[in-house]
Image (cartoon, rainbow, N blue to C red; front, side):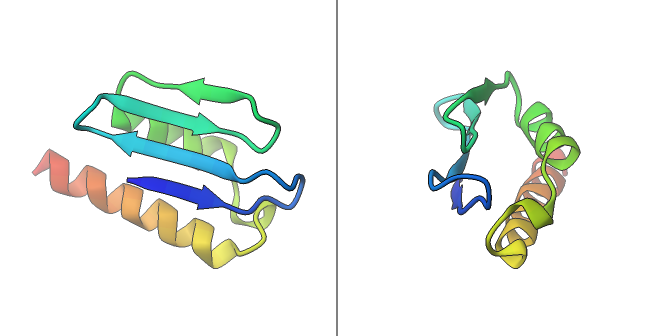
Length: 78
């Protein structure tokens, strides 16, 4: 899964990548810095703790991403 969200603080988008097949779990923030994770759980927890819907141009788009990430966790844990 890959998401690209328009951030209010910069013209560059925030990009979230959860690629289980290739073991890529990363976030590129709007300031072009990044975060890398060893597991999908770590990535999703980081997103929930460090981002909020009001940081993005479309808060509903952020909420939809969080829902998809949460659904992914639920389906993987089953």
